[in-house]
Image (cartoon, rainbow, N blue to C red; front, side):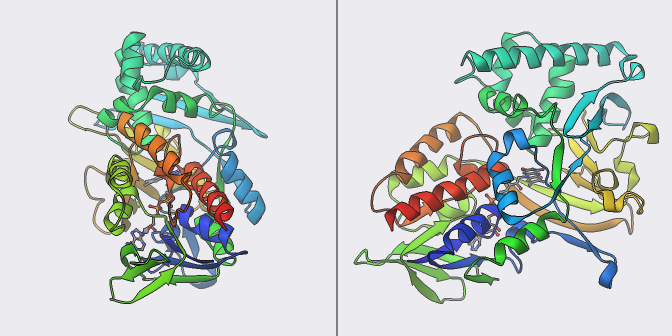
Length: 420
Ligand SMILES: Cc1cc2nc3c(=O)[nH]c(=O)nc-3n(C[C@H](O)[C@H](O)[C@H](O)COP(=O)(O)OP(=O)(O)OC[C@H]3O[C@@H](n4cnc5c(N)ncnc54)[C@H](O)[C@@H]3O)c2cc1C
């Protein structure tokens, strides 16, 4: 069959790679490079140049079985990275931190006695342990369905120092959303992520970064067209095929189309979606965000001894944490290089001459409405005679991460295959 995959994020790359051995596949991506690597940055020149992922993307095996399966199939090497974290007030003073001990495949968070000197830190640590226990028990008993994270912590009267000082900022960092959106996250989804072993297994990254993953996928895809901005998708009047129209006016017919864009982009492209299909896509909200790559150490905790791999600045007046990743601490090849940082939701610009790159992203949000829409998408995917397939991190259960992007691609490829 002749199949178009629109969107070269990880979901689209993976779907195109899975379908290419048996079909005539064309991947269409509007950026000059596949979206998964469109914002990577090259540091240095010539043979010494080192590519750094923007944004940095990590995973841990317990929550990412499908990504692990893909990386194994592709031969992508991965390495453990630190997830030690420091939380600071708006002025950069640390109020809580955890360190990260890595022993082989085991990886544990731990605190030193000096991390517990303040009452605030002790309250946070005590409530964190209680939260872990309560979330595991409630998840095992199936009691979290229909409850938001905010409702769960209120029901269990967890200390505000923990809720506002650790839980919500950490979740808002993982999901790159506002603190309010973190509160509205389904408790079941948050617990699913936290109880899958994140506190025991090493967080990992692809050793050669996203570029290496993309290159391995691209090598197996029939035809790839970057700079191809798709404007519209609709069925031919006789229903025999789909017509994909680009912004440059050209059009092409395909037997099937995999829409591997964000939900709202898919909705804008898909001109003859049925009302129930449009309603399901329209239920996914997303947040826009910016990542800065820079060398400005003023984004880090004030005291150098408080620096961690991940540093989240939280404070009154901030609707979300400003999170700075210390890239030297997570990318071993850069351990001895000049300080390099990535900041999400920067509250100010880096100092003169210290900004290296700026990239914008969109990320789906998970809430009660998106959970309902997910069920509708799954029902629609199972209908016979489909030609349009929705694929992306938003289209699978769980936190929209690399895992759900890849799981969605495997699901669409299997469903599309069964129609052949
Ligand atoms: C700051 C940040 C940090 C993150 N960190 C992690 C992490 O550590 N671990 C993790 O697992 N996940 C992380 N994620 C999430 C993860 O990156 C995403 O879940 C995943 O990459 C989404 O892939 P996708 O293919 O579903 O969507 P996208 O990557 O958004 O892909 C959609 C593609 O469609 C293309 N497109 C859109 N419209 C058109 C059009 N009209 N024509 C042609 N092409 C079009 C876009 O250019 C894009 O390339 C992070 C995300 C962000 C923003």
